[in-house]
Image (cartoon, rainbow, N blue to C red; front, top):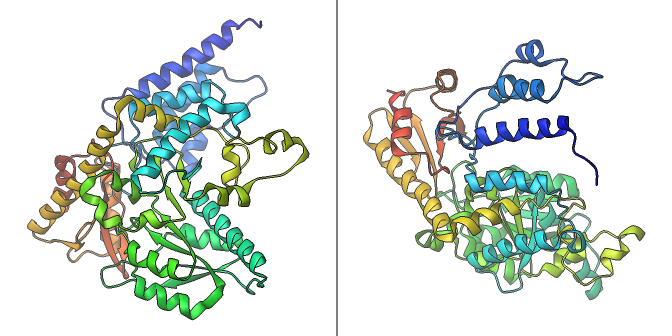
Amino acid sequence: MHAISDETRATVDEVLAYARQRALYSDVPLDKPATLDDLAARAAGSITAEGIGAERATALFADVLAPACLSVDHPAYVSFIPCAPTKAAIAFDLAVSASVLYGGSWLEGAGAVFAENEVLHWLAGEFGLPEGAGGVFVQGGTIGNLSALVAARDAARRRNREAGRADPPRWAIACSAEAHSSIASAAAVMDVDTVPVPTGADGRLHGDAMAAALDAHGDAVFAVVATGGTTNFGIVDDIASVAAAAKERGLWLHIDGAYGLAAMLVEEARPAFAGVELADSVIVDPHKWLFAPFDACALIYRDPAQGLAAHTQHAEYLDTLTDRDEWNPSDYAIQLTRRPRGLPLWFSLATHGADQYRAAVAHGIHLAREIADEIERRDGLSLVRDPQLSVVVFRREGWTRADYQAWSERLLDEQRAFVVPSSHAGEPVLRFAIVSPLTTFEVLTGILDTLA
């Protein structure tokens, strides 16, 4: 047994003391970015031959580096899609790192993999997928979408081989013109085309438009992507009709639910997601609306064997894994080495129970409706579209992009809120993305007051 030195103990104590303090903040600072010149003046030179010691390094982080990073869990951080991890998830993330767990194979991480799979199976059930559905936690929605689409193309290639058909000169993915940018990114990585399908006046992708696009592009399309909650508006596509168009043509249906699919935990929101149960693959990001820390995306396959066939890596040193009939998470996505990033969500769910999660997601939906009504009551403000989930997009009448930007910067400088402008159809707009249960009606009306 190796003795633990006093220096090592002091280092661990120093870091854990800071982590405990930050995790238990009752009043999280919003903070703001610093300039490169300021950080260079205050933080450069930390890497030395002798080291600066844990006490100085921790102080440098706590006093200089951390305040130059926005606190994404602040109740008034309502830009992009916030992150609002539970204290249980934050604490257990430390335990996962301290345990030095490898989550790529059953052989090396059976306990961790089992716990992650408990969560994946629970989510699959919530989404209406059949028993036997499963997958893996990956870094984020971009990697999840890419991994699912790689599996979809592999399945199409195998079908063509079995039927004696040639592959098309160029493969293509059909998706909404409003699909997340990660779909185009995945297509670029895979060197395939995208077929952007126009949405209706309601902002949703509908089956008739998808059917027309599929008929126009023939056998080139290997996958159809529907969105379960767009980032800018929180709009859910007409998944049932899109699914029908895909299934009539024998195509893979993927649901990008990175932000919005968590809303299926709430009974009143489920009808908007009709058709998800027909998906061949889905993703949802727990670091968005399932109260887990960065970074985690749950990728779930209807038939995990499709993911296995596409992603299993083969090498002599891996034979001891691939020759076993065990669940190896690295076989289901574009990755080999992986930390068991689903464990903080598992611990939080096990600790708090599913009902608290349902209530926390419902809070965001109800608050979005409440603040939308308030916006409609106020002079000079108007909704761009009624919220469907927990994103509220609105305008300040008569303001230019420069006005919005100046207002946004002032709010951050005053440490009141982080709200950045967005745009819709060329018009600059504002949006509240509501995720945190600590974001209240009073927090949001306080922000609206500054627009008077």
